[in-house]
Image (cartoon, rainbow, N blue to C red):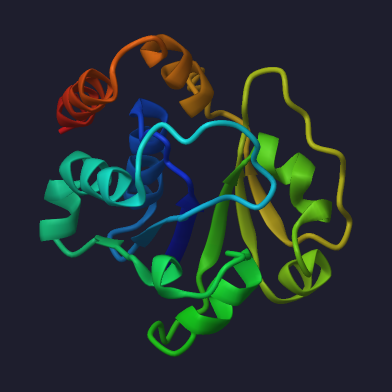
Length: 185
């Protein structure tokens, strides 16, 4: 099975690593495509890191899985025209990926799914794996084909990591995020 795990990863953290490893542990033929978004149309707030920095942090965090061929780090969405909607990315990905991927999202994003661009097309044509988040119960979406991973409890978010890094210079922020990524090896 091929999973597509996208998002801003601003910055990537231990929760992202735990999700990828959970997916890879499900079956020996599982693969994960990591696709950092240049921007998130429904996200407000300051970007902590550039696309290039986030891409590098992901490469460091998943270097073993990438070299083993089970994780692919893709810059495809970065090459597409703005705005960066998931449905547009999936349509472009079909040219390179023979298998239709299963989308990986957190319960926080599942709450927002009805607001995504062409959400009905996404829900009609793709399946999802939704990882639980403490205190978040997404509204039921009867048209959504999904598997809920409810026994996953990793209480960390990029927002929390950014809060911990705020007030630091950009260079120090990046060095701290790099150290966190290296700790996930």
